Image 1 (cartoon, rainbow over the protein chains, first blue to last red):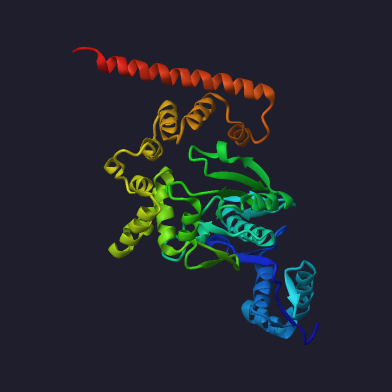
Image 2: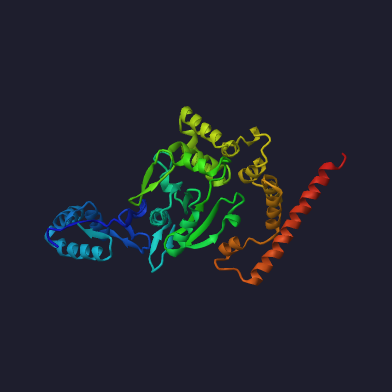
Length: 93
Length: 294
């Protein structure tokens, strides 16, 4: 996936939770769903990817946002980005 | 505050409403239908109390395009829970439900304006505003129309008055004048007066009693009287009278949480006749008491 860019797919609606669950992201493909709940780190990775950019960019953002070394998170981030793509929530550009 | 969604898991109601707006917009777009998203997350900044959570999605469909939207909702797994006749005394909305997205009120018109529906929709949609809901651009009424819609809603819903501190009392005199002017153009003076709590200033409008019952409350008998009085012709008045006695199956279904059985309808029908009888008895007794010489 190196070098490819990612963005939220065109047919996706998403938003963070309210005050009491603001670190959770709720997303869905339109119009049939299903709704997907992305708590904590899963939400952080989705938001990092929603800003657009390469996998390297996303890993940097997650590392910064979670204050965890880049080398520690990179495999998990790469794997989860691939899963978000397979769910149709992210698209390769 | 949370509701289980299809496939397990929970999603907070307020969040679900945001996603519901986006879903309905997507279905409308697919069906080539124009609509406006109303209230809740569709409100423009400054008109909405951020802590206020909507319980359902409200949309107003462009006149003539309702069948296409309803077909679209059906094809995407939505179920109709009430129709335009059974939904409310104003016959303005049908209620639809989806396991994932909850309830949407599909409005054929917004109670209040008596101008023709095309004119009302055009006035509301003027300006071509959109509001991002769950990152999806959704068409919404212009600001003046949004305020009028909230005031009209307050006129027929006790809870709706909670919108007024921001939507009416906090806006400028000039903006209030613009809302009044729009209400005049759309012949919505009675609804506006109901929303602002000055219904007594309205004289000679046969729908005023209906607004009065909704704004201030009243017995079932008073509501049905008001509905008959507000009916535009005798045929409609007769239909209203018939529905006063018959069980509203859509409401009963929502109350029970399942389609009512024949026995449940019969039991409810008997209760309804008894309650109506009591209301009539009370009204007659109250009139007799008032007319007794002192």
